[in-house]
Length: 158
Image (cartoon, rainbow, N blue to C red; front, side, top):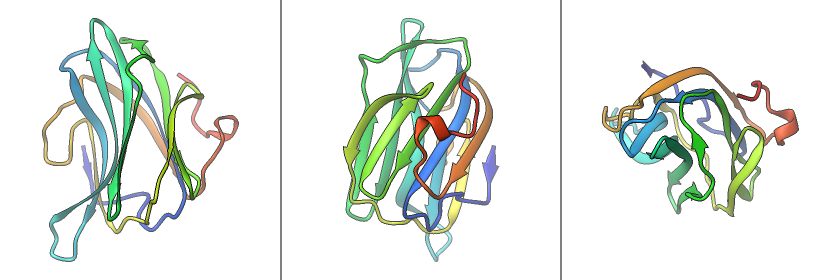
């Protein structure tokens, strides 16, 4: 699915949540991609996304943010989950620290020199350029222009 909106364009802090059910498949799957589009109408190199890695009936989260002066992946292969059930995932940026969560539990965090992203588009189910397709389902997504704590996430846990 492709939408003509970047829900976090202009945000200086954010929470990006989703409910999804991975079903295995390819090792690398990009399943929710927020893409900045430049004034020329073409994608820039600036984006925020959710990916997963899968192996042997398990998956682990890959949250990613890239823009001018920053490029960071939050991924911890040791924190794996079984495919075939619903999960709540989130990534937050509080103005200083970028964090990722699965079912409200911190997966990884790092300082980030984030700058707001511009207007753009998003894709659900694959990378914006139509590669790295997702095998599974996405039930819901929520976006906020503030960093929420896990207790304040708006979507229910998996």
